[in-house]
Length: 369
Image (cartoon, rainbow, N blue to C red; front, side, top):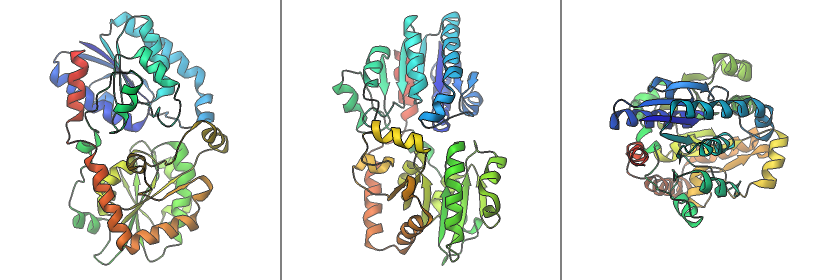
């Protein structure tokens, strides 16, 4: 069996790596090629292009890379034909993967979509492309299966891969001691994301909050995709008084009394662990203007979207000011009835994500064809 996978962001790189391991386990002797990242390569894929290291977010950012990505799409399709690929699996990254799937379909290569685009929020026209180009889709949010089936797209929901992935390395008290927080200390985790734009726009705001909350301890989770140079350049002098730990987001979540996090996958990880979180996000002014024209959104954070209620407070764009973030963080640290209600809602969200084994089930379905 020859398989081609395509992923363009750090989260999909993680999910792709799990899927690749399952392919090798369930179909020994398979060969896997990938547009992806270091984790997919480490899992055994032959990496054609590293899309993850250069991952972008936003309209203006994507436009700058259009011709380069278009070239990769053409080259990948020709490679797939030459190597006689049996199955192609797209993971998220719709701006790229939908174009790639259209090219692959020209040559009769069956395509499957795992971690599907958020067509319920924006790009509703994309569902027609998905219906035309994909044999089957595997969404990872509980309500998405109905969305695709209503449009005539064959879909299976086997749960969310994060259920198997979110596992702190140690118990909460041990982690708190390691991060320098005593029993009576308030510890706030800072998780600014993994993309360059996120670090540049969100990290300075987070560090300003830490500076203005002298009675609170902070620990910053540095994603493995974020270089030390980028972190230092964006953080400047604000990093000197902050403990920084690398590639330990789950430990930061488990140890903290509250989290200030970039909107994204980490919010769902926080929900699984059950930690109160303030969700913040910023993009370029151009991207923000276009987003409000094209995106039909009520909430930005995934737990809020799943529950269709504001479980986590969201501070987006200008609202993500140090003053607003500090106010919301202090409210979470104070605890009380609101936090008890929040934790109860988070349990419901976590329970809706399945019982585990998502990667194994998706791989089996794709191999079956």
